[in-house]
Image (cartoon, rainbow over all chains, first blue to last red; front, top):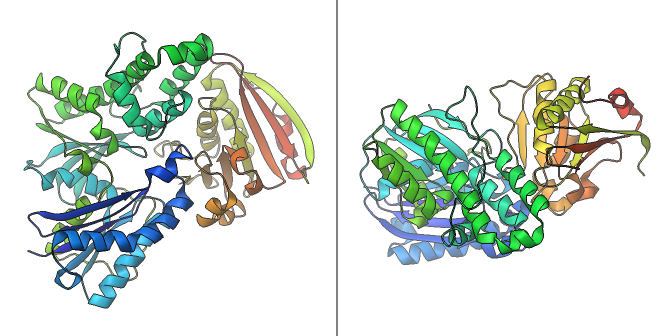
Length: 334
Length: 161
């Protein structure tokens, strides 16, 4: 069993983790939410600059918290893509330097693959299972046949689910991250009070579309006025969230049933949404399908999922060279 | 200084018409064209660019998604389409980091959503498109040709034709 240091800098979190093959020894995330809040979203250049400032202290903290030293580390795993290139390069360059200086094996891993397999850190799930990756930048369904073997079933055609929530938050004047705020507001209102449309895409049963929902909200606010929107904020949040959740649940269940998959795994930041978890569980139970999701800190961006996946690949003998580069657009291996 | 060669506007009654206008613009595109788009959330910028991609013969398998999160999506077509989204950006430095100049002055068509967020990034010569919401599904689409090179887009005066 190898002790692996994992690094993640693909988006707005600088994260480091130490994993020994059985247990996560430490998991540090330096969130950039504070600076992004001001801009109502992630500002890529700020992200890259902040990663550069925080990576060293974050790695130090991860090592300290793990009870091992850099000399005990036996392998380095780093997110190689997809993500913002400037941000990715901070983690990759750091990983390469440590790998070179300490003569340690290096592995670049796929961020999405890290998310869809993160559940394995916390519980046993039999392959194949259905993975729903749902975050600010992604909304996709994959059949996970095993580590390194995936089949893409469908994706969003326009906005990602988390982006749909973020933009609704912007329209409603909520803060960032809007997803968590909408989740909280929605709990206090009837989701059926204000009805939002659900998009169907003819001929593409596993694809998603959220842009019509966004336009519906724009029209609602225009038609009824700002005062109405402020007064009915909770009802709007609840109705909007319910539409997002229903579209995710319907397509995911359809995919699980049609492909005879007994387990659905939720992953990505939106998988932390309580309404999504609840409705997916309730609906899946009707068909005898199990729903699994990792704890919230493993749903949002983190380095433990990278250390875990990297550990598996390193144990299989896979290595990346020092000429490794960031891959902003990297589909999962088939 | 901006050289306005001409301007026209048209009313689109639904997303399908907006997309069709995008297709027509896409068919006329040449390597190196820059299209700067503005319009509020839900105005139909991505919709227009989905049409543009179709006009550029981008494969239907390649979904033209909102690049809000990724900032830039590249699609292969008759000419490559560089689809930018400046929604989350506020100054030029941020764009410099992703090497946007190489795309803008490259051999593809660059389409930039939320162009006015980083006005200094937009070349003086470009096709400027502003989508104004005038009803639930109706949009006024204003097209301005800045520079002689973009005058070929001045003949497109209707969504439906």
